Image (cartoon, rainbow, N blue to C red):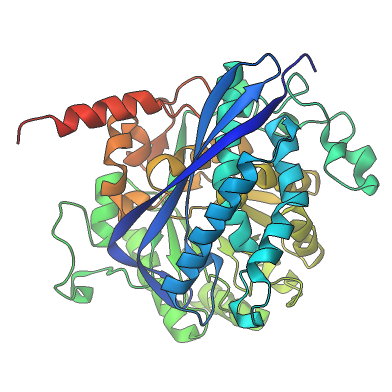
Length: 466
């Protein structure tokens, strides 16, 4: 490669708090808000030029770290780990393409840092690997953004032989040499001429969300945003509904699917999915639910596009054969899909799809995408309630990955005000119209945040007379 390597020379982080306008249920926990961490990395090219990049990720403790510890303790531990990572990234010193640098950090530094974090702690108080990936993801994202800005290209246009020192054989074991020789991540992306400027948007129907007037408790916000599902569908033109289920009460789960399905039928919504967030113990639970739905409500069953992560995310500990489910509907790894090696493990157990997330590092998501594509797996990109800048690389990943149906985006449901500044520059990304989000406003370098314009409009808004 012709002098395109870069290395990190400085790192800085900041934390931002945001509150959900409506509670959001993850598995067995209900969340009222979250903390987002922003990393700003400065990189230096081989010619001495410098550039900065930004990455943001919510520290969603209920999703990344289920368990008996309090939310406050888990959050403080994750924030402390971000501080440790800030120092580690600032002094890492490895030069190369962001994929090469990010992969080296995940392989060589991240496990040691997590071991230090967990040293001397009892098993139930040990931070999981998923947390480590989430905390590291904002730095990884900032690196990809900075690299694109340094070279004046979009971040996703830099995954080619022109910018990378190694083809994909550098990242996988010898057994995959023939499979990946001479190939680069861009070979698995949607071709540039076919990139869709808009993506269908999945709306999250949380387990505590009111569906109809009789579900209202009188405590719902009166803030100008919809509350009931039909109102959301009418306002945003929704065509894709993701239904959160409990996984330990088959009757409740069945009724919930039917209630949402009936609303979908009445309003013309064509696509449904079901997410159990790791709460199911046996395939028979899901199979029984699907069989009952197919027998009693085939109209709703036909709209069910896929099932998401019913089983505990520790796939090594719970190697459950899922072929009985995939014989009926596609089944997507989510929490279990830490990296391509976990995707491979799931594939061997019968999973036929993987949900990618930028919050597990973009570098890792790209490697999972390439492996999954080579093995015929279906692709989705799922949300982590990504507000502010976090939604942008998330949406770009979905645009380039070629999902089976759009992308999940739910920050505009649960914390729309957190993204007010960004929405002034990118209105099509933070408000769903005609059931879609638009990426047309993004800039031409890095992730296209247009950060200076966001800051300028925020200052102008703050200066407006009341």
